Image 1 (spheres, rainbow, N blue to C red):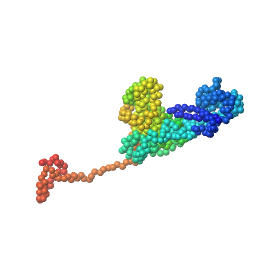
Image 2: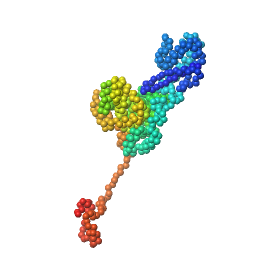
Image 3: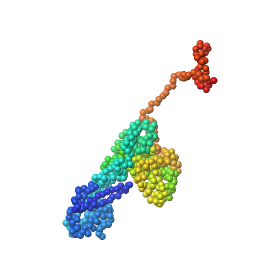
Image 4: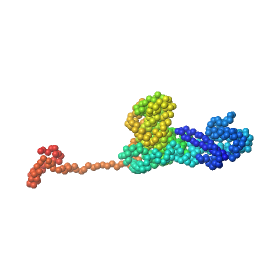
Length: 562
């Protein structure tokens, strides 16, 4: 018995999607109702291969090879004069297969099987339509099947590149528990911690926040927790309000592109895509002058993987307005400024790499916006992305420059790597194809922290490039002073704003009252250099007559005469 199994697989390669179709031919026992990947199998009657074999064995094999090739998406397999299917869509392939089967049956005098072939083609067409509808918005057909396709890794990606064996690349369980207890202690009294122990917070962020506590630590680090408390009910009003139809249409077209292999964003009607729609719509209503930027999608999606929608919204507000102001506006003026700053840092820290990039004509605007706007969510393995975010929320935009410099050094740091990239396309390809083994979280983050770039040096370079920036550039001039360098500066700014606005209770002042009368301190009598026998004699004799001698309380032993 012959059974044809039509399956569909989708591989998400960065942003593009490659859809391939394959057919499995099984002979022998009757196949089960569902295939190995959870798809329905189309089983042909027992006389189908026998009919071909009884008439012309070679022609039967030729016909099977044609529709096998058609389902694989090949352009031409079969007899001459037969038109191959147009495109690689499942519907067109199924329609072409049905027509080919009917022609083959009529040519070989098997009119009795025409009805069967027509019905089989309709079933194949319906199955392809169902698969196309379920996967056109980013979901995968493997979701309905058993493992390993349905298996998700510890971050929620279904069979993605982040899948790994348990315990692989993770610190020991005891160390994770120790770090969790440390973060619980730090977050219990957050104001006291940020006022007195910020160095401890910074060090722990560089080690990595435990996955179980990111939902608690991220809003505290970026100041979203304070914003949410000072604006109660704001997000609910924005979420319930009708949004701008233009922005809603644009956001709706981008929803299925945000991590399509993550279990949260698989279904168009799932809580992941719907929550993402609400968060992005709320931001367009919260800041109508800025609207929506396509790069906000992956940033909000990463936040929603760890936070409820309201907390994710306020974290997005803090990232767009405090960490990266001017990045997601209509003119993106801060991106232009940071591109010039990054080129200057390359010239100072990696002069040979900078010279090579100039020779091949690769400017920072060709690769830097994708890195900085998405906070490397599209460019690094997801475990490394989370480590970058932990440090970024703690130390600010300085971390983005360090990560970018590290990536450029890993891609073009050696002479052999630069020699293999003689042109623009090869250089851009090398920047986007760094081996995953060099991007593992521990080793990569240690290289990031070793980059010689301090906050003071970065601010100095920003001032220099801002002065050199042409006034003829379109759009408003960048305002880097609105960007706060990390969690400590954000905490201090919120404390100052709360004290001035009266949103927080006033701290009672401690006034120290001076003593009512100042009495001279009692001191031991100066006996150094004097005869002890004379003191005893004077103390035993009658009291001296005359006014009392003043007490020399301020005399020191240096004034004593020997």
